[in-house]
Length: 118
Image (cartoon, rainbow, N blue to C red; front, side):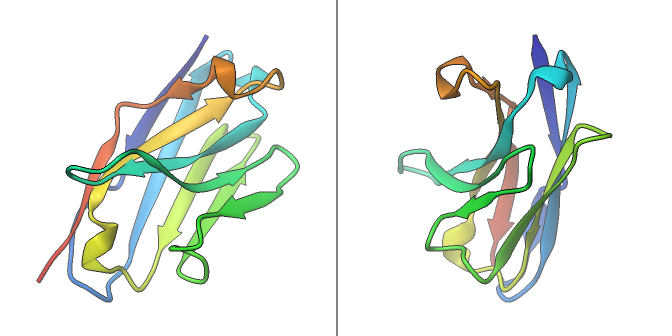
């Protein structure tokens, strides 16, 4: 079983940057995809970005060109560099991991709050 712990959330002004990190423990060797989802107040949870073990990435259109996802397979960590942050990026950000068998066996972290406000 995999456990995920996020860190790096906080309050940032519009236009600012923030870096989120997520560390996997437990059966981390089973992980294929890692990534980030977010849920804003009153909205559904949505994909932010994912990265496979081989480094293939996928981004939501709303964050393309502003956010960068990266991964360290040796350390079982994934990071999300967020630049040019907007108030609409305010949300709880969740780290996820999927085994090779797919998202039906997805593990979720507890989430970290990002608030973009002046």
